[in-house]
Image (cartoon, rainbow, N blue to C red; front, side, top):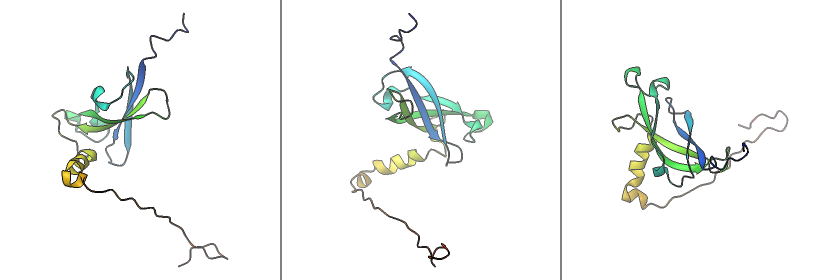
Length: 137
């Protein structure tokens, strides 16, 4: 029966996401995997051609994606996930746009981890001149 999809319902789509070559753009690619997945350690590493994103030379272009965090995919829904990744060379060195690697080193320091987080709310506004609708000052 063509409508019986029970053999296929345990698959998920994992969207691997990483920082692109400019350091300001995001890249991603998706793969179908057995699921559901509860922890990034359950996911395989993946690779991409870093020369196409400006993150590796053409002669040695392989970049490896290491899954670091997973979130429910709000677009595909179901058990599908978004996978936040760090990017490394095949030798295991973080590539220059892998800013999360440096941040993880800082935040794993016990003296930093012991700090209390502070948050501030800031509301911005502009006052306009009544007659011409231009900002005051």
